[in-house]
Image (cartoon, rainbow, N blue to C red; front, side, top):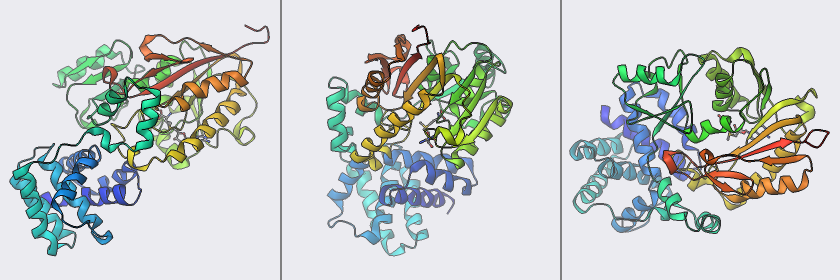
Length: 435
Ligand SMILES: C[S@@+](CC[C@H](N)C(=O)[O-])C[C@H]1O[C@@H](n2cnc3c(N)ncnc32)[C@H](O)[C@@H]1O
């Protein structure tokens, strides 16, 4: 029964994500703490990601092998069958154990009457292999069209990158030691890593390990963060000593923490509209021993009257809410849940945040606008429109570490150098003398 438990949990998570519009991250964070064995937790996660990286292929197998479409009451069974299929391909778990545990899971889910069917379909998948379906079938048509418009030469690479398992990137807390020192600590533990020439605090692990087994993790020596996300803090550099920095959309706190790690003289005001997510920022900063230089506030960053005392910031970071189309490999359910109409609302919100937050920046100060999107409407077009309506804003160049030039900013496309997709723009507020 032990093996079936992880299949049951994975099925429930996937049923919620595939059929009830829930987010994978939220479902996993509810479900995983109830799974006592860390190996089972890792298995649940691996199964869920394997399913959500190729739902079109699994659907094609079901369409081919199940004569009638499954009724609504059997959507959980659909999720369970997908859980079964991915264990055979691409996970390549020992097939006898995988099939047996999945059939047991059918019984544990109160579907003993369908256990024979589950067994037969998994045996068939084992014999015949799953059909081949191109990765682009997982992307909604409107999003494929938007990509083809924005990145006609790169669209296939972007879609392929979305189906890949991303590497595990670490960010070394340089308040506790240099990257080389942490690299040596990993080596001493037999964990192989490579450093990165563009992101100065980043190490990429050759094989992922559970975070709890990273040396010094609990004491704050290191965090998990993609190298493209780490570069956001580099786009703000150099900061003057003792700068007051605003991180306007801060949760779960990766960039707030990185800012504080980089420079022990600065203080950061970290806002987020979501109080629950803001509590994760607090926990992260406490683990990293950085909380004393941060001021956390739950607020709508665009409603200045609600949170701003009128004292200008030296630097502002807007890591904006966005379509997350640059991080599909980490959040594959983006492709299931994102609607074309969401984009209009996101663009309006981004513009509102840009306009309001610009007012909080002192003349001469620097403002970074970043997203984990690959859509130009949220990125270069958003910045271009902002520059056109904001006479005291001036774009400053970023170098090729930040990816290819995209309007006044730079775009890193997903998969390049093993990075997530990200957009960065650096803006300067002219001071009174026009400089
Ligand atoms: C891309 S995430 C930020 C990631 C974060 N900077 C990090 O590095 O961990 C965007 C965040 O914006 C927050 N958000 C959305 N609308 C907001 C608003 N009006 N004011 C403040 N935060 C907002 C969301 O709750 C979400 O946490």
